[in-house]
Length: 241
Image 1 (cartoon, rainbow, N blue to C red):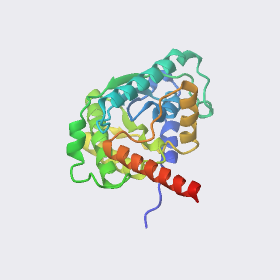
Image 2 (image 1 turned 135 degrees about the horizontal axis):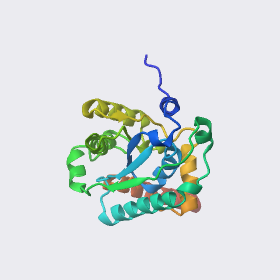
Image 3 (image 1 turned 45 degrees about the vertical axis):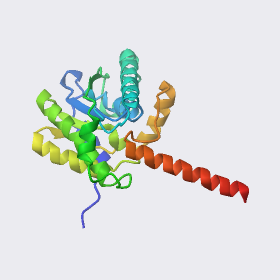
């Protein structure tokens, strides 16, 4: 029987090995699904890594929605960079000896919804959180790994593990496999741990970030709409009773 891995503890060990000298900070190519999920991850990691955020989410079916989320991502990063010199160290940063935050860069990926549809063909009716999502994880992480390798980054990672609705075990499994394939280190994570998800909610409120209640793909949206209709029907039955 395989032991359950503690990905957050593994990340802590990596960070413990990073030099406190800001000039020696490793580079991280970080896939981001949206500004709210990245808020905590960036607040946490910018003390230890020189981060380039890669916004690549071809799963988002509506272009208007895609552009809105991309704009929010850039707005958050601009806000973080504007106060970089005034940022108060987090408790973790103090404990690990980090002295300063690093400016964050951002790169837009291509908007390729047809690539997503091709990737999940045959998996359209999988429930949310199943095989369709796993194929989508790999699509986005593969593009991230390829660009990280081409850009000579020390690590690549994703903000997706901050969400309690995303499978951190599967995400780390895919990331580690792609790390072997592309020759760039995968930064293990389970960012929801140690209050990470709750902190992302707090930061979203603080910065007035646009939050979504579905991942962005048409299938997730349909499932959300069915759930809302069912809740509405249930409420109607309850009130009439």
